[in-house]
Length: 251
Image (cartoon, rainbow, N blue to C red; front, side, top):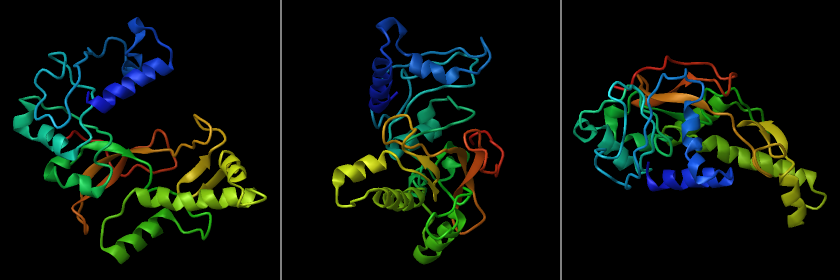
């Protein structure tokens, strides 16, 4: 667990009002749904950002096949862990990370080692979404971006596009678009469907927060213009997105 992960864990426990003896539930909840007794779990302590090894920082059962934890948000640190000498003989069957490997540039430090590393995706050409303004589809927007820039698409294209869709809805709903408070109130009530799919700011987990339904992806080698690409391997949270590839072991 890196410092960011530690802060998240503490805040999650405090927000739930858990007494000290019950803290850590937020992390253990990731194991819900797994058959009772199927896994042996352990807690490894805080891992310094940019660490070069995992010795003394992770705990796993001798016959375990799944290890949960947090790694530094710096891609360079992840590259260190992914190399065989840094894993110190420990080879996970499946690696999934957050905060890194969300964009093509993140894969540079890992090179071929990124193949089949899993992460989440909130937007891409595989999303069956279309603009609320001109009905352009996600796949078409991706193609236009790559053709005009020569660069691989970014997930942020979709969410940035949706900022304008949401703003248009709020300004339209306000009787005076120059009234900041009225516009702010309107933002909290926006419910629309566009480039990022359905967004409901009135019914999210907190006031003024909307959730984009993500999918699970793995970085996989591509025969196209770009050496690696995200492929959808899990659509449990967004069944409208088709599965593109099988979930496979990481390297």
